[in-house]
Length: 492
Image (cartoon, rainbow, N blue to C red; front, side):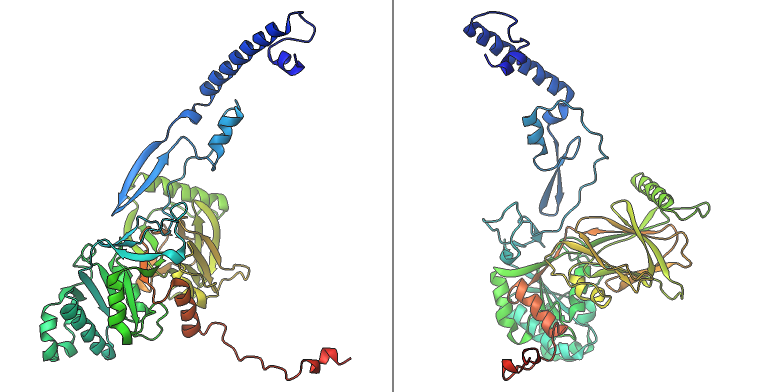
């Protein structure tokens, strides 16, 4: 019998003289009993490997998100490795379970408004589609169309009337417009348009909720019209079709000259879309109340943040959420009218990252990377890249460069205790307000992206907008040499 088997059975070589068959039977029974005893010991000491997770199901609109509440987080494949190895070591002490994040991505079950969704892709892996395969489809034919027109631009009156006539008379659509657009003086004077105007459904921003009745959004104007359309829908956003009739047109790929053909294609479905992620922003007032100013150290700041989390979790009356909204481009924190530097603290998932001293800081989406962030020196990121950009505005430290963090993390910005002045914050250039001591701004990736319909595809449209709007990599071309042998480095 091999020495290894004798040792496992509790026998030493030469201790007993028994036949080989009896030894084999004895060793087999003992090995089985040892294996069973170890299995019981493992189950007693490591119950977490046999505990099933509790299935929690939440519903967000038409999309169901599933999460598993287990006793601790494991890396992929960790459970299988532990069960196969048979280790009897005690479980390691780990930090408390982090909250669930909503990562932006082209999830196949995502719906945009009451009737639009992504065309299912049977070749998708891990429920994440290839961006090139993002196609729009309709569960039911669209009926209600929201038309957004750039205000105070008389050149858009005629395109607006043409589009409304086409939608109402030829397509038999129910058209929604803002009341101030329908009450435009130029439309009131046009008697030939009065019949169409009387059939338009009007609404007022901030008073009427149209989020659950719009199937498609059509924008006439520049990039500001798409930003305005995003602000009207704080949850699920219907597909957006934007025509370039403004000054820049980075987010508006369609030409109005062929609007009938392009709109008809969208109604038929199977159009390419770009999912533009948004930021979920929450402004909380008076979360931290300091009896006195303590020394400004890393430990003090971390203790203050932990106290903030405790108060936020307990729904303390001292903290009041004054604003909560979805942002498509960026959140800008600046020094406002003060002549002093802006001094704010930046946290990422509960950890103090740095203090931003300068003119301010920009937290932007990939869509906003080509806006204010690009002017401040940030890189330009394709809208389908799931990320959040943090860009300082004229930082006092020259080593503070723009950074990109994963989508889904939670950023928090507070006024530094030793700041000489308050700060100001704006959201896509709107709702500007002052941030004082004890206030905080929480920012994370929203689970409601803006589905922007592409004219060609999401790659071609983006690079074409870079070339046309920003004149990206445009320079005077170098002249070709008549004879390559004339080069100065080959003369000798």
